[in-house]
Length: 329
Length: 269
Image (cartoon, rainbow over all chains, first blue to last red; front, side, top):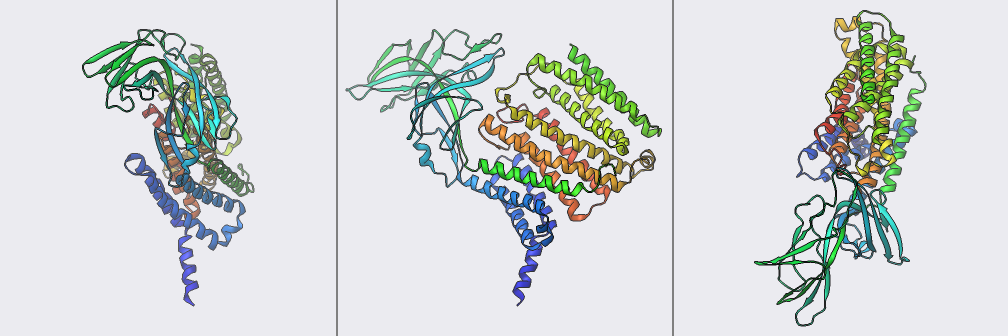
C-alpha cells in the first residue's frame, strides 16, 4: 500500500524546480568545462540533459497546474523532443571529407569520417557523382570569393544531369549534403605502366592545398603495386593569385614537375616519361582537385520544427502572461 | 572620410544626451525631450554613417571589431531610445544605461576603422536574420540592466535620492523580467537562425566554436535566471543581480569573443 505513496514522493522530488536549476547549472558548468578542455567529449552533456528530461517528464506527469498552462507545456514538450532528436542525431549522423580531381567520380569512399553507431553507411557507398570542374575568383588580397563547382549526378537510379554547387548550395543526394570547400589545389596526373605488361593505371597526386601551402607544393606517393616512394613537386614562376588585382584559381600556363627517388631527379613537362625498373611513368598534365565536406543528419528539419514550436509556444506563454498588465502601468 | 565624421558627430550627440540624462538624475531636472531629441539626432547621423560605409564597402557592419562596435552602439541606442520614448516612467534609467554605452563609444574610438573583407560564407540572408535577432536580444537586455542598475543603486542613500522619481523596485523588477523574457525569445531565435546559417555556410549546424559556445552559455544563463525567478520568488535586488550577471555574459559573448578570437566562428574567414 505504501508503494503508490513512495512513487508519488519520488515523482515530486524528481519534478522539483530546484532540481531543474541544479541540472541547468550543471549543464552550463559542463559546457564551460568541455569548451576549456579539448580532451573531454561533448557526450558528457548527455548527463545533465538526461536529468533535465527526467525532471521535466516528472513535472508533466505530477504537476497539474503545469499541465494546465498549455503554451508552457508545449514549450517544454518541444524541448523534450529536441533532446530526443539530438540523441537520435548523435546515433545516426555522419560527417566526413573527400577530395576529387577534375573529371573524377565519387565512388563512396571518404578520406576522413565520423559517424554515429547506427549510420547506414551503405547508402553513401552507393552514391555516384562526378566533379566536372570548378571556378573560384579571388579579389585583391588575395581574398577568396564564392566557389562554383560543376557536378554531374550519376546515380544510383538517377538520370545523369549537371548542376552547379556553391559555398551555400550543397549537392544533396539521399540526404547527404556535399559542400565544396576552400581546400583545393593542383593535381598532377600520371600514367603508370608496370614492367612486364601489367594493366596500365592512371592516377593523380593531390598536392597540398593552394594557396594555403603556396610554397610547399610537393608530396610523396607510391605507384600501385610497388614499394617506390616518389617525391613530386610542382614548379612554376607565374603569379596565379595576384595580391593587387582580381584573379582566378587555375593551373599555371607553364610549369614543370620535379620527381625524386632517392638521389635520382627528373624534371617533366606534360608528355614527359621516366623509365624505372618497376615500370614507366608518364606525366599527363596538371588539373585541379576540390575538397568536399559531407554531412548527413536526418533530424535537421525536425530539429528546426521543434525549435520553432518551442519558441512560438514560449512567446505565446509570455504574451498571455504580460498582456494583462500594460508596460506603462 | 564622411562616414567617420558622421559617426564622431553622432557619438558627440549621444554623449551630450547621456550627460544630460545623468545630470537630470543627479540634479533632479527633467530635460527629457532634449535627451530624446539628441538621441534621435545621433541615431540619424549614425544611420547615415553606417549606410555610407555599407555603400562604399558593399557589405554591412559585421566584419571588423570597429564595425561590430558601431552597429551595436547603433542598435543598443535605438533599443534604449524606443524604451525611453515609450516608457516615460523609466527614463531615469538612462543614467545607468548611457555610461555602459559610453564604454563602447570609448572602445570604438580606439578601434581600427580600416576596411575588412567579407568572407564568402557571409553572403546569405540568414546572416542578417541572425544578427537582427541578436541585436533585439542585446537591446532588451540593456533596458533590463538599466532597470536592474536603478534597483541596485537604491541600496545606497545617494541612489535612493537620485532615482526617487522612478517607480518602486517591484515594478522595475517586473519590467526587467519582461525585457529578459523578450531577450530569451530573441536569443533563442538568434541561435536557430545562426544554426541555419552555419549549416548553409560550413556544412554543420553546430560545432561548439567559441561564439556558438558563448552564445549558448548566454542562453543557458538567461534560462537559469528566468527559472530562478519562478522557483524562488526572488527579491527585486536578487533579480537585479541576475540581470546584471546575464548582461555581463552577453557582453562577453558579443564583444569579448570577437575581440579575443580571430575566427570566432569556425570557418568564418
